[in-house]
Length: 171
Image (cartoon, rainbow, N blue to C red; front, side, top):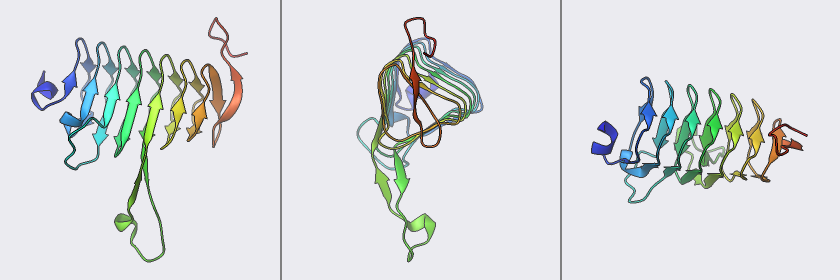
């Protein structure tokens, strides 16, 4: 109820445990029945913006210390599971010789995560990533590209290592 009063669009039966941080609530829309465990951050860019930067569907589970950092647009579908310490961002700093790191301009983009995906612990989802329905990102994987529906990816950068069969097993 508290976040709704600050402008967040929020469905029913969401659980948000303490220890996390949320800013710019009016730039966040959350569906129904999502669970955010302790330490999760929903972090839209700290500027005025009339739209939604972070859009989360229904029945997702976000384990400890998941951070969603958005300057452009992050969209997450339904029934996904995110392991601890997952980082999702839709932007990155440019770099050059003549500017201090804090003065470098941002490159904004977007991230789209489909339905029923499983994102392993400490995975990083970067600007431009598109995760198809039912895909798996192995623990520690770094994704910056299209992942086919049902595909399993691992590594730095993440590469296909297999697919999920109808039982959900890799094969």
